[in-house]
Image 1 (tube, each protein chain N blue to C red):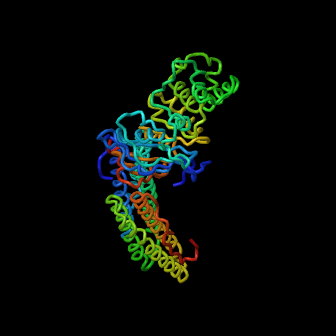
Image 2 (image 1 turned 90 degrees about the vertical axis):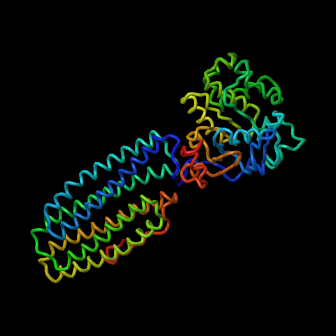
Image 3 (image 1 turned 90 degrees about the horizontal axis):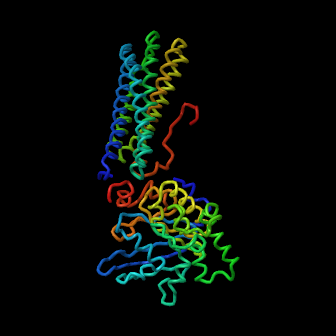
Length: 264
Length: 233
């Protein structure tokens, strides 16, 4: 079956992140078992699977968020543009500027809309003066499809926005440091359908510039926004294929059982 | 997929749609058998029954389409479930066409009743109808049992049907050339044979849907075709 979206403007040949034999233990718990996957540049990759399947754990490996968990032990190799992100010389803070993250619940800083977006560029020293910073803030808000709604109240607190706007603000904040990869952990689960559609439209737009990886519990969302889908189950990567293939003719019976609503 | 959905209403909806298409298949088989019998025995009452019965077949197709639209809108089926819904709709459409051909047979039976008999014709048409109804029965059995081998066998048999039709075509041509008084009945009988042959194509379409349902893709090779009537494909 031809996918209209899958062939439109996608550079489906460039690997952005290459993971091989990644294992994660949380203490005694073997949370992720031998996961190898190539994540494409300028495409949306969806991770799906039941709760506890390892999809968020794997997502958090991609920008070393698991470093902050004392009991977590990560083995295997994860290459970003061919460079090992777990190399001791890599600064996790610098890495996270390149691999941005958006979380389930919108979590703007208790600061103004402007400062929410300006914070990252400031601490990473990405601008030389106020007008450069203004430009970064504006372009990030524009890319996050929020500029027109907030341009007249940049000094208002970010926490005063609606849920959907807050989430787009968090996306603007993640974009502001000029990342190459955006990780999204259930970015729409706290949003209403309209705000969800706006964020999905934004995700579809963002893949022109970024490699986007999204964890979602909504199979329909994975089908709507992604070009590649990975199905995780019990810590294993069961199947990784083009999204149209996964949703019309998956190869593994466990994938079929999950996406058709037969196992939880 | 044989394990049940977590949401049992989903299973009920899918099973209901499939039960309807199986029932529709039963009605179409019976209509074809009755129409062939009515033609063979010049039974006007039986032919009338077939004509009236087509309404029930059409109504079933409508109901199947309505249920499938609801399944798509409300349940968002994927993978095997999606293929089930799509094949139910396509099989229902094929059966509806086959039902129309049965009705057309019955109509022509009424017209033929007033015309002279064509020697040998009823035997050849009876054999053709029997083979086609068997194809349809097997295609539906293949659907019910998800039987890939049987579906592929049905698909192959369409070739035999084409050959039987071609020889009937030549037979009628000979009659008409020898005795122009047979042109009227032979034209009707030819349309009847052609329509039965078309039912064979619809049975093949059902078999191909079974292949799609089971494997996720339609057969890629060109369907076997034989046409020596000089009419082209």
